[in-house]
Image: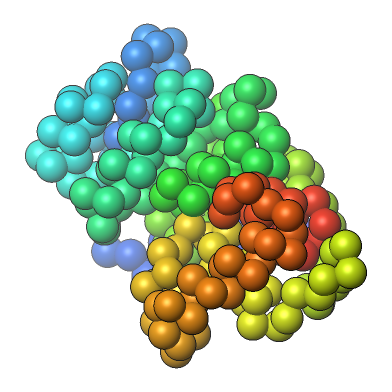
Length: 229
């Protein structure tokens, strides 16, 4: 049987690592805590750090335990403030968001990415999919579970016209980086242009897509098939 792309990537990532990934959870539901702990403990490529609830305890745990990945549920962080806080404080760590039905829309998931989430997986995912989301999220820095990709439109990477206003190739490139949650400075470094130039491109994208903000623009872009996963 041909090995899936995800499985191949997992094998490669694990061979390149010399230690298990350290995993923690921020949530107050006992059943969820025990379930995630059981999944992590059963996988030799992962190490369980612990579970806490609330922002202060989460910061203390990350500072003390130095996890590679912290899992957060969408229902426990509806405004993605904790996600943003942890990713800003701990640069070497990623946030994996367990997406519930209430956040399974293009704009909600775009906001999660803009606030620092690097891996998205349904909250009801089985153990294999959860492990995949953790490991590929850490090693690739960008993972969306196939079930959630269905919330976005099919891929079409070309300049298109929306309301008679075409997006330029550079604007599409900037939009792609925005969708990954990168700041203007980070985008500027990636593309070799100035930070103010990036902001100008972002403003052009917002205007052309008639979007309220960056998250709304990303959500519209997925719906219009401008972005890929």
